[in-house]
Length: 239
Image (cartoon, rainbow, N blue to C red; front, top):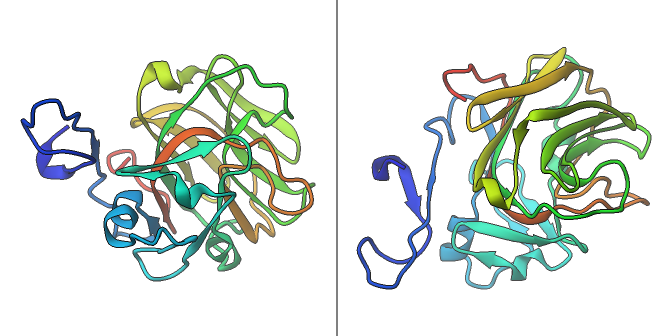
C-alpha cells in the first residue's frame, strides 16, 4: 500500500528479519459522518493495560471486549478465537444508527480463518445487529469456502460466490453500505452482492458473534481490525 496512507503494524522499514504489515486506511476514517471508530493499533500503543474498554476514537461510544479478546491484541489487529471472543458496541446501535430508514456504512479489515464449522446457519459472524434473537441482521463468513453471507430474521438472503474471504485470500476491507432500504457488500471496494431489508429496533451491535443475549454463538475466527461506522451511505468512490 501507499505508505503515506498506511499504518505500519510492526517493525521498521528495511529492518532485517522483521515483517512489516501495512493496512491501507480509508481517507474518510474519522470524518464525513464517521460516528464510531476503534483501532487496535492505537489500543496496543496507547493502552498498555489492555483494558476490556475499547476506546471509540470519535469519543462517542466506547466498546467492550468480551471473552478475553483484550489479551489477544497484536499491533494492527485483534485475534478472535471462535470460542467466546467478541466486541460489544451497543451504544452505536442504541443511538439509532441502524434504525429503519437511516443510511449507514460499516467497514473493517478482516483475515478470517476458513474452517469446517458445524454451528448454526450464521457461519462465522462478522457483525450483527439485533433487539432479540428473532430480530437479527448479520453478516458472516460461510463455513468451508469463505463466501460472504447475510441473514435477516433467520433467513439467508445473500450468499455470494463472487466474493470470498479467508486466510488464502489475505486481508480484505469488508464494507456494508445501506441506503435506508437495501444494502450492498463490498470486498476491497468491489461489489459482491446485497439485498433489500429494514433495520427496525436494532439496539444492539455485536462484532464477532451472532447474538449477545441468551443465545450467544457462531463466533468469528481469525483477525480483525480498524472498525468504523458512518451514519451515511458512503459513495462507491469513497468505498
